[in-house]
Picture 1: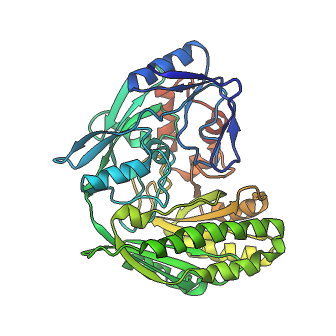
Picture 2 (picture 1 turned 120 degrees about the horizontal axis):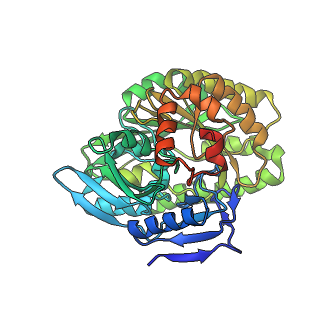
Picture 3 (picture 1 turned 90 degrees about the vertical axis):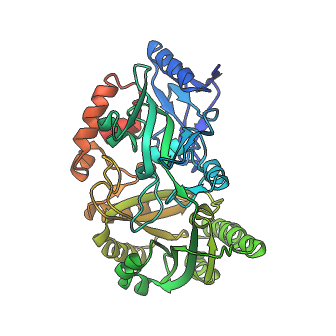
Length: 439
């Protein structure tokens, strides 16, 4: 039986602390059938419905004053098909648990993002991605989906079954229904060798095309107020497995990347004038290292310092110019930016509202520490990104609306027409969806 929690005093907040909501009630269903019953009941009561994962979106995509569905009982692996090489998981399963469970079975996703706190449905519904020359976002690895639609029915879709729904629902923004299970393509677990090394901003931007072409997964971080960047190249390896030693991992990933970095954020927030000097030190703190391990231990890392983020997907050919414009803008302004700028890539995919839909893409992500004013920096960055036909990440801060997206996505009308069919009364509507998809 699903648990209903009264929301009278319950305020929901996202991870970044910049979004809150007070739902009329919260429901914690333990099965697709219970979720479907909760959706039907909400419709009878005239309440809107939103599902929320771990709140890692920086937009109000999951906020509602109606019924908030929490999927923490919808977890675990439902089925592993070793013939088809697929795994079906409940929607509320955290990526962390999925990755560990798959590794135990000798399996792995092909690509993943750089954190794994999110639920599988939250991550895929907003288009979460890592970096890859040939392998795309987590949603692009979906082979089938199960979702509860506005009339309370449970719909399954794949390339063969309800293909029009499948084309859109892999990145559905919570607008088409509540996802209850996801089937991913998997492969036998493999090894990746990561090569991390510092590089100057000028070199990483001038050699970007080459670095992208030569590596299966390439990404880098540029530290504002400096000419320094940290690069990371991940490529498949025949082994042997050589993980980062425990002491070294703690020192570099916990002490430096989280502990010292957190302290630097506190100092920077208290005395913004110190930020450029801190950036010079931070950008040189991590030395070069090479290690070989299974995918999730290479792709992902702990992120304990809370922040707010904006990220845009640009045509891959435009990323270097946009990044140079961003650097010039920061250098010429009195902005004090204490967080590095992250750059990643993705190949074109065939999902209607994927940020990489129909075009090879590169991503630029800008961050500010939680609690610091981010509007001026993000507004100036967004102006640069939109001038290059940028598409914002659905789960990260942006100011774009349906009119903009109708021009930015060739298949935007296809998505909204499907939404009209699946949710004509807008049961899954909220302020964010009204803005980005239109009323």
